[in-house]
Image (tube, helix red, strand yellow):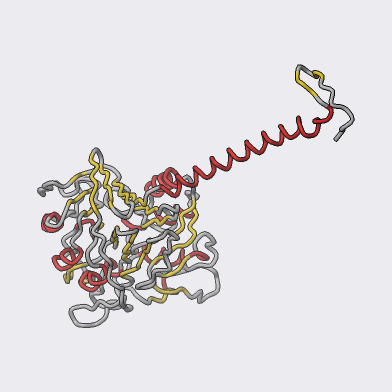
Length: 405
């Protein structure tokens, strides 16, 4: 810089000195930039802090007589469980659920998509709606897809097209075209949105669904009915497709035990809890095997929409839920929820339903949301919001049992 003169004069209405030309004006610009950068960093830090402060949340979507839910951890790690459709040729629920995902996550990306079992009211129909539509039509991207280990496909005639006679079953019972179509979709390497990210479920795994949050664990506590036996003592986890009265697909439902801090939540699709044969297939008591892997908890998403085939005495008595949630359609033709199940759940705590299903039963103090039910938790307490009702509970803070096969 120039030290030859210390004369001060005005330039453009400002005091100017040649001596401080490089130390005065330009550093002031640099200082402004540094201040602006600092403010930007503070703003980013604030946003990150807000994101970290976001609560753990479970969104029980009101989809009528079916299931779909989104679990979101404070880190943003997300798990979608099921996406039903009301019939085989529609994708209406998929479109609604995709909109909800974008609204909640501000993104099309879901870390893990899971399918509890292969029934229309939980996964829709491949090549038409449901989970297939989410991935192929609605723009939802899955980091991983976990479904049950139904079987495999061998392209016998090398034409690249999957047909029913090319499927080999591993864990299967009473089959339907819903299952056949899904297998042909998910097992075909040409389906790039699903084949590379698909992983079959594994009993007692805590790594297939692995949120990064401290104190967060998702354990698969039921997979393909492994460990359960029928009345004849034979394992349910086998290929029963040629049996005269095979196990129902519900028996093979995947169950998740979700933990965040001291909060525990259980969801298991249509897991069966009763031995009963009808319409050419049999329900088996899978809940009896699963209950000891779960233990006491805070929130139970009632199996099979609160039907009489699930939520048996031993199961509910073992879990002792403070809150039970039932996903059910208004005035459905199945009689869901069953009055005995409703009374049983209310012996242990509060019950919330997405809609008023069976109109013939006494709902007692149950809350009918007529919409989505949202559960949030900080790991010490949890809050349920259903319609106009919001209620907060203390978590039990129990340590879940170690899952054993």
